[in-house]
Image (cartoon, rainbow, N blue to C red; front, side, top):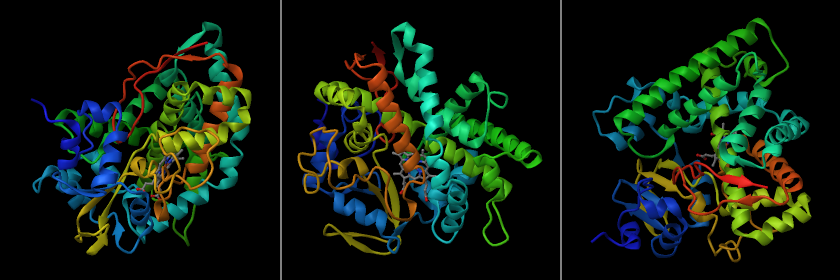
Length: 416
Ligand code: HEM
């Protein structure tokens, strides 16, 4: 007889996308660990941390926790003989600044935030509204759409292309769809699990495709500078030095990718959750000005990214357990966001909720550089949907989730 889920989760928890109960709803597992074994040693060789204060302490504590040795971290998943840097997808990932520690991280993040300024992000508001309206104009007469592909994926992609100055001449609809698929296939290397050979090969091929595309964009901007983020990245300087060609390509893929599925699934998870709580959807329809606060509650309640991870730099005590130097720790953002020690009635979805901040964008030196952009896209997207499609019906039966680390829907049919 199959082992009951709770026992399985308490014995050796893994973010296993093949666990049907976890995939359908990870929150019972998160609650069980948080209440019964909040600093859990998983049989898979890492700690799983689920309480808000512990998760926050880990992401804020740059003294004792960081990224550590990338090659070693990946070998912990695949075994000692694994040739990490023979794989283009891991070669790329090693150089993305989210996986680096100071001083490398500080320099790269500084150069990126010089280009991705608050002013540049705020100035996108009218464009984000235009893009949102254009996407709805295309489908509104049809009375229905598959929300994930017809809207949720297209909005952050179009916004990031707009910021990078990539227009229809540089990427038509087919190329954009191919770029999105390449991001999905290659970002699997971010998940803390060994990928089967076919998934790893696909991730490698797709990262090479993305590298070729972005290198060509930067070559063109070097010849013909424009007022866009791609040109701003070319011009960013730290003392005398700027981003190398490889760093620029790496960063562009990271920006394009990090803001794509996470933002798309914030919208998809949002519509599903709003329609599982019809009174909350009605509140939003009655007052679309609640959209920013609704986006915040969606990020807390049904986050599109449920975890991040760190390596302990030194032996550290956490929740009465000794985390040994070199050990890996999964910081479960999605579990922390429902911690009753911090949030009143954490399993209640309330778009007017006020109070402590969720941890969905992380914290400390790696705090999400795209948080403000994602918030604006969430607020404009939800307000516009509530205003233009107030009678929306969402098919919320048996949703098909794509993963537990990146939590989002494979499709979502809506009508109006
Ligand atoms: C709902 C949408 C989003 C979510 C849930 C999200 C979540 C996160 C989280 C949790 C981190 C911290 C990771 C860690 O501490 O290990 C992070 C970092 C990052 N995010 Fe986001 N993100 C979102 C949107 C975006 C967007 C739109 C962009 C790009 C414009 C972006 C770019 C980045 C980058 C580059 C980092 C690395 C920062 C660093 O290491 O210093 N993200 N994000």
